[in-house]
Length: 150
Image 1 (cartoon, one colour):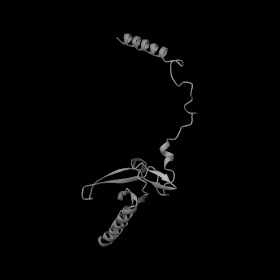
Image 2 (cartoon, one colour):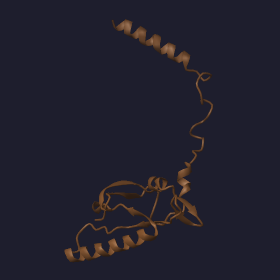
Image 3 (cartoon, helix red, strand yellow):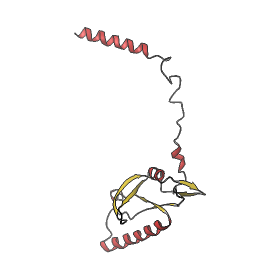
Image 4 (cartoon, helix red, strand yellow):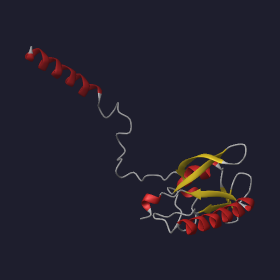
């Protein structure tokens, strides 16, 4: 039984080595390690982002109901969000598909509370700043994970 198994194994190995030669295999003459890697077009498409923002930075996409209240949100990268908005540059300004300027907003993000009253006052100030920005710009809200703040 063992001898039969080894004979079959040797037979299939011999058949495989005959069908895989340099003439029948594609791309065998190219040295993959020496070939320079091309960068994707999206990596250079948004090359003028603010200093603290990269294409891999996580942002929040809010989903609102009919009344304008946030019911849920999705976390995605800046690159994916900009592609969704059909963003491009116009005269050194980042604009969406409709030509409205895009701005990034950093929400209040604390690892520990500064006290109830202070937290409420700071949150109101940030909410007001966000609503003012949304009137003039397309706003991308950065994702805040309080666990990473500490």
